[in-house]
Length: 327
Picture 1: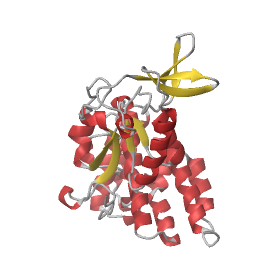
Picture 2: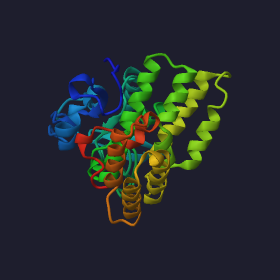
Picture 3: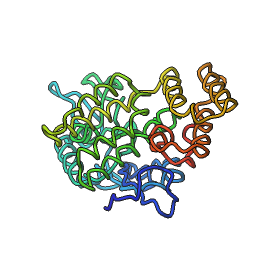
């Protein structure tokens, strides 16, 4: 599937923007592939996100040759390991791991993966694991999902249930668009200049997640003449790991103040006062994040500042998704 886009940012008109390849548990698209013949259609994915992504449905249980309907599967402790066993007694662990490795390699162009929560094959956390006594704890990871995440540690992965949380939803979609931009950069031919430009676009987003990591990654890129490929691999792995970290109100405020510093000399006194007031009201919880961000974007239209305009932080995903309204 072609992952080339005119630009990763959300400012492109919909008709000009090619969709982002995104793998998804097939049951979340409405496909009747669950063990009981049902599905778990996710309305956010299929009614809102679908405008911007090209879904690649995958059901690992069907992928390893199981029928629908089929005996249910559960994770259980067995001789010091956690295995996936079907109710008919079949041990499906090796098959699910092999399928996970196959899909990780085959779907090299995907920018993210949305998996079905609580599934013994797809769940990314808190999956029930049964002990020999019959007691269960929510401590497991689906065998397929675990293998996929081990093979592709930089890949944005999220569960359907967690997408109901506004902050987790916004975080995942941000990571999705950033990683897609990274894949596009590599498709076009990775260069030292391209990597430095990408890091520059990530500056304020990284500062919001972790100022410490922002500085460390800047140091990592100080000498790209050694081994560009190795450095870029380390870079994207740490970048994507860091972007999982929730942004605090304090860090958002710090970034907003930095942005204010870049453009204040172009603003009139009333404009500076309005922006400072918006940022302070956000800091104290009286305004949502969108208020100062919208004002900054408005000022950038009046007073263009290319370095700031190309920052992922200002608008990491399409505004029509309305993901920052609750932040």
